[in-house]
Amino acid sequence: MIEFKQVSKRFGSVVALDGVNIHFPKGSICGLFGPNGAGKSTIMKLITGINYPDQGEVKVRGASPKAQRQLVAYLPEVDHLYPWWNLAQAARFMSVFYPDWDEGRCKELLSFLRLDEGMILGKISKGQRAKAKLLMVLSRRAPYLLLDEPFSGIDLLTREEIAHALIKGYREGEQTLIISTHEIDEIESLVDQVVFIDQGRIQLQSDAEQLRMERNKSLVEIMKEVFRNGSQQV
Image (cartoon, rainbow, N blue to C red; front, side, top):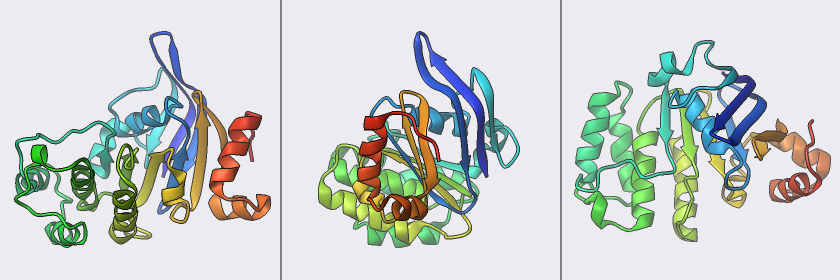
């Protein structure tokens, strides 16, 4: 379980998060939805221990994120893989650095994503690179998987492949998956928990299916309604 209690974070004069309370249930797939600059990446970096809150408290399994870093597999929005590596070298690095690396799972996902171990990361397409980054996260048995804008700037077919890989790679009941994105269409059918955030404040958080039933609308329609009408809580 991951909890945020009255968390605020500033970067200079910019308020990234303002008194945020969130509960990410164990074993769930959570969609963290909002426009660019809403505070989604800041939440991800606080969970990983890359950043620290100015106020409030973040807990991962009851401890500080820094103490639980080995439990979290993180796919950042920015590209973090060396361009001179091939996929085999990147996987080898991950296997040494993370004891939860699953080599069999990596081989399976390589085939599923139509990637080759010999591909040089700096010489492949943007879509292939996005899939390579995803491979490095889904091949771990980490209890918490964080994906920050995994669909950003890639074509429709690649987004569909990544969504299918998420389904295939997710270990139901064993892992908590948090996906930060403004491309809600791609994962609407996957998520069972949703958090809408804008301008550093939580606008709405709920069980996804309950929300759809109560409002008789898709998550995309609900997001538009929430951001149009301002802060709401359920």
